Length: 238
Image (tube, rainbow, N blue to C red; front, top):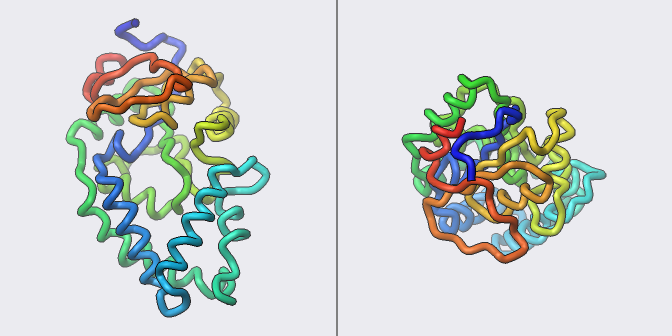
């Protein structure tokens, strides 16, 4: 394994949760669903709401790229108990403006994250935030701020609004679409992430770097990462 990136690399894709930002995902997701459910509890019982949103999120994972993830969500989720998207959206907007920040307590900034992203820009790479696009831009922007990496001119940040697929172990549409948007071949890109849905990008020909801060075992179907180590270990490669 080489100790330096090939000179052909033009773009670096960074996953967010678990890569640039430490997150207790179990607590984060549980509390996210509970808080979001409470924002519309006057319309639909929380248990029923959470069940529906989980089913809808699962369907987005199978998005075949004909619609944005946001449109897939809207088509399957609304009407909600007889209420249209237009009826519900103000409550969701208020949640993201006022309550989403409460979830920050389940995250922790990685001191090295800003330095790594800064170095990527300093070296002239195009930098993409390749986070699972199931949440709106405002939620992702807030998490970038929590990670201390919000103030960079990213080439692309994948969100529910601008993506037509999401990370999956059954297809590679998410990565194919990023490559189409930025105009680089797969072998000119590096994906940095901590989960199997990040490292599966290797099937496209994308170079991969596995964050190994936490021990995780992947199935044999997941390609071996090109590089592995801590986020700090990435810096000498850039």
